[in-house]
Length: 219
Image 1 (cartoon, rainbow, N blue to C red):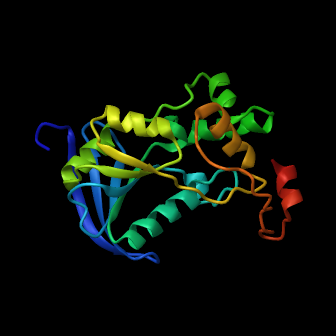
Image 2 (cartoon, rainbow, N blue to C red):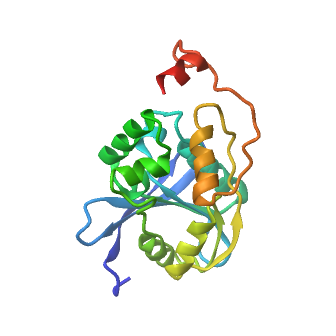
């Protein structure tokens, strides 16, 4: 990686509820955030099961019901363990690249009736500001030659290919929708080209003493 501004900084074996992963931290010169590759098994070579996942503090830490990010991350970790090898690239690109504070501003606009796309535009942001050069650098360092990409977003496949990543195929990565994230998922399907079925009628289970109707009212 001598010709790149990206460097492997540290790594360790990390036991988790899904299995034991090799976690590798990467730094990009002049950028304050670090990114991590979460590896299972031998990931050098071709057709490696891979998820390129962007950070979502609200979903992954606070267990927000507005999105499906935590469930997608959990599913990707389970899938690479079941496959016997694979890698999840965890990129620090909160809110499709606009950052946590502005993502919360977008959520505030959604409370006023805007969908996730129009909320970004009203606040002066593009629909998606994420970049994937880090993913390419990390995969190259790990010796991954080509990937089977876990995503419902065909545009991500094309963006990764544009960074020089060989994507052999797209692996659908579906989690069950519910009443509180269905609108968000429908916007991604209808306006951003994501591919999935939203036919489930499941309601979210009661949480912390609130039923689904109360949670919907809070939205």
